[in-house]
Every structure is written in C-alpha cells, then in structure tokens.
Image 1 (cartoon, rainbow, N blue to C red):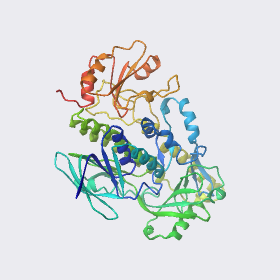
Image 2 (image 1 turned 90 degrees about the vertical axis):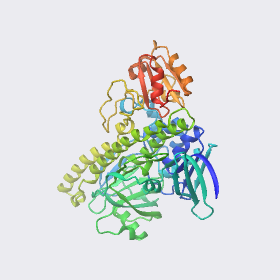
Image 3 (image 1 turned 135 degrees about the vertical axis):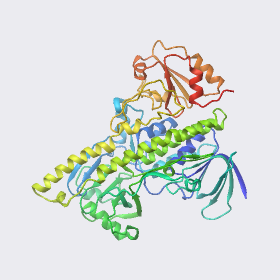
Image 4 (image 1 turned 120 degrees about the vertical axis):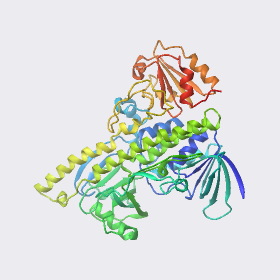
Length: 553
C-alpha cells in the first residue's frame, strides 16, 4: 500500500475542513483533506455568513471574493413572512444589499462596529471559494472522492487509511494529527466513542422534526409573487409551514417545508415536491427540480469531548444545530480558526502540546452557548401557532394577522439581528487567557458591547485612512500600542524574539482607541482574540508564555 506522510489529516471537505486547510496552509503546514463527495457541495445547505466569519475571510484575504458570490450586489437581503407567498405579508426585516453592506459598514458604530457585515450566500458558493483558496496553497492536498476508512492513534502520530470512493488502491497516511470535520454522522467521533450531549427529538410545528428540502429553479416565482423581493421567504399558515432562500437572486431557490406527523416524506416523489411548494406559494407554477430529500430539525447537540489524544473533532462532528440563526456553519468556521493556529504552533515547536488542550476548553462552551441560542430562536418561530384564521378575510383574520405580525416582527429581529451572538463569543475561564480582573458585559443575542476584556474579540474601529484596525494585525501575534503616551514595549519584542513568536507591534496614537481598549497595551492572538491587556510591559514574558503555552526551556 502506498504511504503518504503529512502533518495534519482532515476528514471532511465542508466549510470547516476547507477552512482548516486555508488556515494551516497559510502557516506552511502540510495538510491532506479527504472527502467522500465528488466535489464541493451541490445543494445550497447553509445560506448565511455572519459578520465575524466574514472578518476571518477578510483576514485571509478573500472577503471581497466571497461577497461577490451568491446574490447580485443590488439584490435585497430582507427576511419576510407571509401567510403564503402570494398571500398576506406579515412581517419583514429590511437588511442591506451586498453593495450597501460594503458602503454602510464604515458608518456603523456600537454593536455593529465591524470590519465586515454579514453576507447572504449559499454554502455551495462558500465551499467553492474556500476550495479555490486552499488549492492554491502549496502544502495542501485536497482530495474529493476519497474517504477515511480507519485510523489509529499510537501516541506519536496517527496512522490512517483513505480510499477512493469509486474504487482503487487505498492509501496509507501517516499524520501528526487528525481532525474529524466529517459531519453529523462522523466516522471519527464514532470511532473514538464520543457521545452526544444536549437535546434532540424536539417537536415543533416548524423547525422541529422532519423537514423536506427542495433545491429548484423557479424563474416564474417573481411573476407570481406580489410583494417586494427578499432573500428569505417564510410561509406561515395552518396547512404548511416553510421557508425559502434565494440562491442566485434570479431563479434558484432552497426551499424547506415542515413534514406533518403521519406523512412519509422519505417516499415523496417529484410530484409531491411540486405539491408542497405550491402549498407554501398559494398557487402552482412550473419549477425545475434539482434535488430533494429530508432532514431533521430539533437538534441542540454538543459532543461530550472534542479531543482524544492526537485526534480532534470539529464542525458538525462536534456540534449539531437546528439551523436557526445560521449558527452551525459559522460555529464550524470558528472551530477551524481556533484549532489551526494552535496545531501550527505546536507542529513548529513554538508551543507546548498543552496548547492543544485549549481547543476543547475554549470551543465546547461556545458550542453549548450557540446551540442554546439556536434552540431559543427555533422555539420562538416554531412554537408560534399558525391557525386557519390567519387566512380569513374580515375582522377575525385582520386581528389574527396583526397578532402574528407583532410576534414575527419581534422574532425576526431576535433571530437575524444578532451582533451579540456574532461578536460576543468569549473564552472566559480558559487558562491560556491572561485575565486582568475585569468582567465582560452580559451576553445578549441582540446587543454587543465592544470590550477588550481578555478572552473575546478585539473592539473594532475604522482608522483615519479608511482602513480597518483589524487590517493592521499580523498573521501571528499582534501587540496593540495605543495612545500618545504609550509605555515602552521593548520587553514584549525581546521576549517574543526569545520565544520564537511572530509578533507585530502596531501603534496608534489616537486617544479614542486608547479609551476603547481601556488600556494602552493589548496582546491579540493569531485568531484575533484578546489574550492580555495592561498598562505596562512588565509582565510581557509571562503573558506570552501563558497565551502561547510555552514551557520554560
């Protein structure tokens, strides 16, 4: 059997696995990605990229390429609710187009002070960009149509067998580490015997139980649709609850409908798909079916462990969401961002292997937080009772629609205006974060208070030259030096050189930045998380040793 040596083997070529390849590849780590699919995703799947994920894409240099994907630049990104798509409009959240997002982001402050705003783009486009970027990195070997068959962790490394799905000779892989980013039915998680914790099997009228997914072309939709265009269209009636996202802004849509108890959606045919879509639309129009199938909503599951020795799990292999708020894909991307720099630092001999223990310590609480938020959003929309009176003419129908409008207008802002969820994730309690005794603001989904309290995202600001503060951060560690009378930083620079840390010192005299960070010095990790802040550089070496898990030599 042919043998291939690599540093990191990644099982799974979805957003998490591809993001790992991008992060590792940029750090010069040889990475093999194996995925059983013939290529990147055909179906749209996840449809919303949060602002924090877009900030990471910006850090890697391809946010503009990503923002050019999916909807046309001038297409609305509203979320709108209707009794049926041709019936009454009940609620709407108006959001900026992709072009407006680029213009507006520099004018926004407070909760939405960010380098990037969210982008509405289907996963099929996201994966294509991530693959193009990963393929361009010389240390990456991206193999679709190849599947992980087995693996063994012998303490010094991981031996694995991967094989072409279409048949052919298997390949023996020798890797230093293995990451299972291989989805909800993860071979890696199951082989490690890691169980799920959390909640599953939740039943709701909508977004709880079996769902029917339909990927289609429907160019006649806009001729039949009597309302202003949106990005997401939600149907709320007693016959069939559904939601639909525009994939390309022209004719392609990802449609998902609730399956009622007693219905056998696994046996549904193309005729059933047309029937169910017509129920949500309120009339029949011609559609071209690209694919259809079923999936299950109602999961809020987090693996009991994210690591066993030299093997890690990430993305859907580690946490499974009901996809309200778009949290599953975005949480998976942040898993990759967190894990990759740590693997690279350990593989290059800069950090102790103890640094890798921080992956579970930091990411598991975030997964539990985010699955809880997704469950809350699903309860808010899915437990709302859509009664037949919603579609009646007259005073009773008017009153029911007014009540639905109140609830759904509140709900859409709860689920989709979520700067607190997006930016407020923190690693408080991690022993690799050097606390300063301060406490972060409360964790709220719809409000975010920027804070440089160690353990969270650095506060963002736009600079006088029009660039983002984040654009000046280094690919490794960054020391922000703020204010006109900032302290001497030579202790940090000398300690970083002794410890072989890539440290960029970034100076800004603006007093407003000093006030924003509430300290003249802030140490930012490679994943753009504040690791330490202080008034002097007196404890520079201690801060760097803790944050990077460097043992005394």
